[in-house]
Length: 129
Image (cartoon, rainbow, N blue to C red; front, side, top):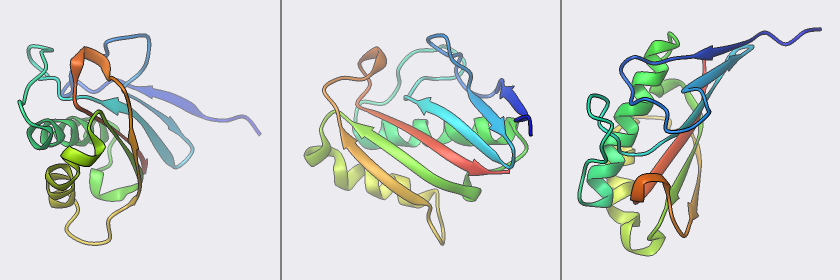
């Protein structure tokens, strides 16, 4: 059986900073590329704190979901990448939690040495369509 695969371009999200799509729809799932805290209009990194950057990441992911006809509240799994896992965790967790009123998705958090454009956080998601 052939796999129906469709790339998603999200006008409300910042342009990709490399050779990747905002997301790929495959079957009933949407695989969202990682979002860093880039302003969709300027493409510049915004937010001084990990919490502020987390909010922009989540807003960017929401825009990608919307472009695909779904919403972030249908997320199945998210991955959070942080350059300071210990120091940023509380702030990021608070912001992240505000995007999921009930039944949050599965999640993984990974400490990393660096992220694109000097970001402190990146978030990706797998979302049901």
